[in-house]
Length: 86
Image 1 (cartoon, rainbow, N blue to C red):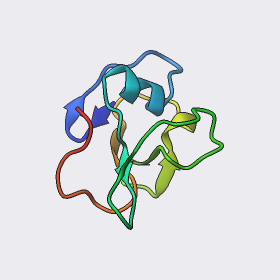
Image 2: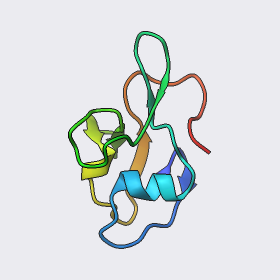
Image 3: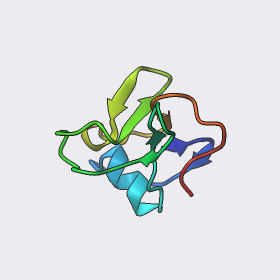
Image 4: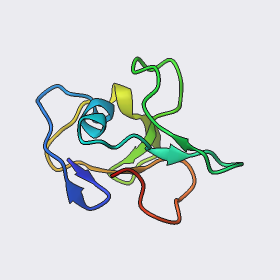
């Protein structure tokens, strides 16, 4: 899995959210209004805090998307001004 240009190893069947958290990435997006960091919160798909873009697609919940080789993951929501996470 690639996170903002960095290769992050992940375990098979691991969610994108879990893989990011395992590598110390705590923030996957920022709120639209105040730019506050958001990341993995519930871990079961009930909230929308962990939104990411996978392979250039629309925002998805990182906790529900399984990691696969070569996938490119970027912050969700509005485009950040600087890299997020680690």
